Image (cartoon, rainbow, N blue to C red):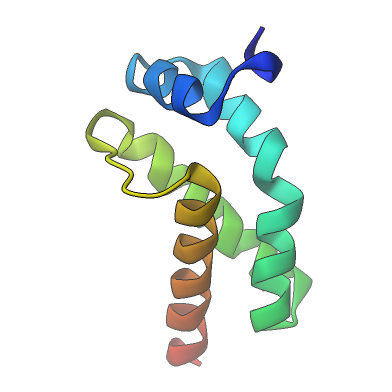
Length: 90
């Protein structure tokens, strides 16, 4: 059921604490987000951690999540900025 839903529909379910919606977001965007992170960080383990941090943050903030752009854009930008923070710590 969730695989057929739009991103907006998944966000609505996410706000209702639907773990399957979060799982679908993970499956839908993992590869793209990992590529974005790996492009910036160049270390696969760091890229994986970066993406997981962003997705965990989405789950933790699910009740207050407000998107001005598409979910794909939001996630890509969040990964980009998380990667920048990781690099700044080094």
